[in-house]
Length: 389
Image 1 (cartoon, helix red, strand yellow):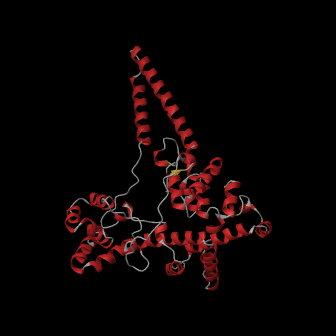
Image 2 (cartoon, rainbow, N blue to C red):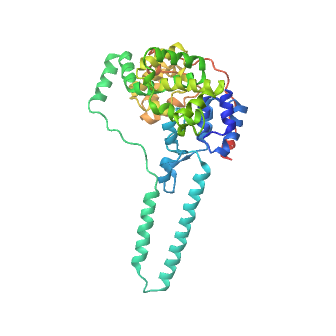
Image 3 (cartoon, one colour):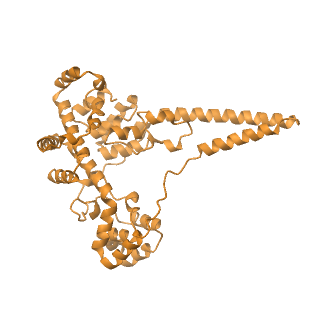
């Protein structure tokens, strides 16, 4: 739920829907302070998300039982199901609750250790004590340790037999165009998801374009592509917390009483929902092109992106993005001889080279590399403690 102050800011368009979705993940007693920080610093949605990520807790690191977390509204996994804009999966956005539960587990652990030490001391005095009890305690502690030990969520993907060889041969014999095709093949799902997100945010931020998208959707028979839960799950955020539980007749009355600002925000959200759910990606591409949507607002080259590719494909990306020319052929060839992980690190951390704004051809709608655009200087980093306090 949003605080009244945040709702008013959203209705007055002082913040965007993406800001509101992120603030909905913050405990109510901290939303107003966070809102002040966002408005005062002029934070865009991406910077707000980054700021929120710094004060979240990884659920994988939790020492306590996470059963209740599965349905908790402060679980980023739950937020992902409801909102387009959210922090990474597997994080808790309620720092206070996380800390209290952690402290409770730590207190229980200290008590258990004290009890175990007392029992061990008593056993040392009583030579007839049952050694099996100590063994049981040790086994239990081993089991607890095994349970608490964080697990590696990464999965090892087995290579597809033959495919890697084919890619390498094509890269060697077919030239850059073949490499570009292989890269595009690995990127199709990410490309589509990212452009849908960029379009959704663009429409949420521009009521005029959102209205145009809705009209096009309605008049082409594709408005019904919007899934039932896409908007109903956002109704409490867009209208009021009680809206989902009202009867249909009452909902009509509430909608009729919406202010112009609220109605505009809801229509923008409908346009964003269409971008997310319309079945044909060609429609997404056409809308993005018509409205001048820039993927740079939601995405840039990072390690997760580069790890998808073979060394030959990484060389192609480095070449088209200007990194090879920046480093020099000889220096890059030397880097290319390193392990893949080191190669990626070297590409991302090359001195004097910034990946921001560079869109590889595999991520572009027209299949052509796009260089950085001139962007206004970023604001200085804001104080994180506003959300953590």
